[in-house]
Image (cartoon, rainbow, N blue to C red; front, side):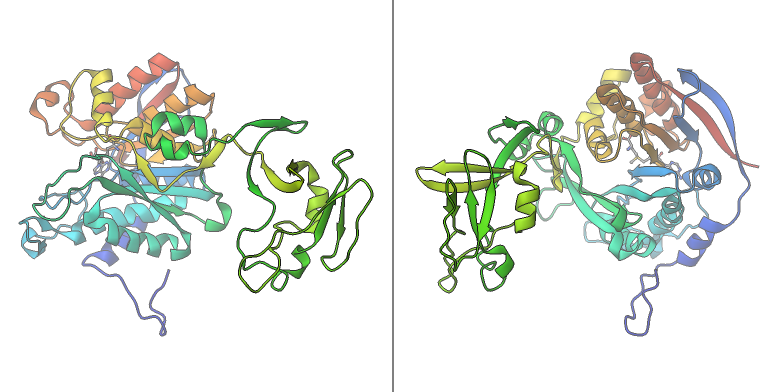
Length: 451
Ligand SMILES: C[S@@+](CC[C@H](N)C(=O)[O-])C[C@H]1O[C@@H](n2cnc3c(N)ncnc32)[C@H](O)[C@@H]1O
């Protein structure tokens, strides 16, 4: 996406951007070696041990346009010194110092993430989605580069994940922090649907379910199945009236015995035998007489089975039946305690981590948005939460999702834990081994190497 047209001179630049771009598309000779297979043989689930940039290049050979959903939780720019393996190293003294004495070298972080995001997009299907976890330090920059790579029009949402309702104050000023972000982009916004989630599922995992739970309407049934009634047929917005929507303002005549429907114009004084006349609902805007109906005459006839006529002491109200009742829209605010991730690891592997892996339920919720046979990619897999979530969801709803996880063999920084698992990929594999033996799935592990 080019922002530098003459009318719209705008550019997001940082030191090293051109090299980072080149790094994405430099041909590199990469190969993979199968090193292990666990659980059921012949599984499509893959763990790649290696650098994510190299591994993404490798994946492009076979998985271009094949991935349904990417979730990543990249290393955040915490303001402490960090050093990624790429060639772009900018010395700390050139970085930006903020008033709490941390140094944010935004260029290093952007040079690290930019080429990976460029390649990731190519792996997505035309209706694919990418979800990126991030905190305040790079949220704004990440939005800029995602706008550049995916196109501004393909921005879907920023989910606010409340992970600690008590709040945590780490910088020494301002409010206590309760949430972080999950930025969502589509490969092509035209190909994606609304994010619908099973209400029953949502209620179980998200304590905000009282709000979701407000969808408690009386369940009814007719020959077409279950439904609830939420809204009447008239348009509650008084702007829609006989002047602005003349085609939608008319009398409806209803025969309660036969279910037949007829119409007449508002100025006609017509009654039909055995039919009750239902004039449009009165407008209260002080100017107009009536409110418009939400449906046209044609739609009313075609979908009469989706209307419910109720006679309240001689006044007939018309309701529209809502049949898609098992699902509700995912809200852009999610509450799942962040420390659940730690507990999940200690339940499976028996040790407490210093770091905060993501809670499985958070990832399951995201995966629930796409179909049950999706291919899911996570190229900063860490402890393998995304793989675990795929296994659990498949077990739960008999799904056929598969995953590709990428994780480098980065050293574990906790001295005690190091004795058990010297590198993070080993934690990931051990966790997945445990889960897949419990549920009867499998996965294959490859090492990614430069040739
Ligand atoms: C924030 S953690 C991800 C945690 C993960 N979501 C979980 O629930 O366990 C980021 C991970 O990215 C890994 N990582 C960092 N740089 C990498 C690279 N160049 N290639 C592959 N993995 C990398 C780190 O080792 C770390 O485990």
